[in-house]
Length: 149
Image (cartoon, rainbow, N blue to C red; front, side, top):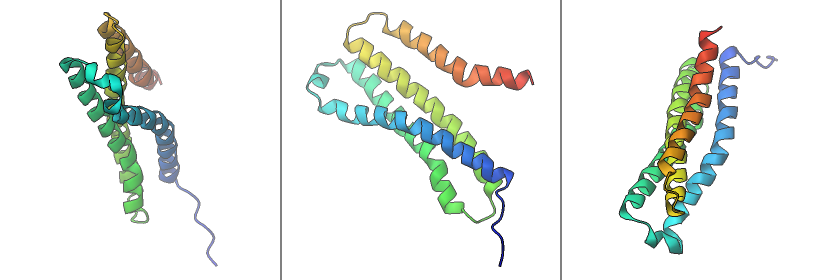
């Protein structure tokens, strides 16, 4: 009888990617669900045309983030057992990065829209600061660690 095969480095890497995706998906699902229900709320009719554009861009960014962050799971299902684990892991990593960029746009758009609706005149400044914070934490800090190793 054959013993079960030990997971290789690519199996472990893909397991890490899947765990990272699980962490992101919960917040994204809540945001996407909120955005999908927003047009059906009573106050939505009161927002301006520009705010509706921000809403649509935010909704599309959220939908795109959902697609990119779920795609690695689908790809794994489609290619499982095909001997393509390194390609799957590399592609999943790229999809995750693109999904994070889309998520950043969705979060920024949602925060901007909420601040605009509650009449915060400096909404753009707050969103810009938040975007810098996200970019710093999600990209600059990891890249600094990579450069300093």
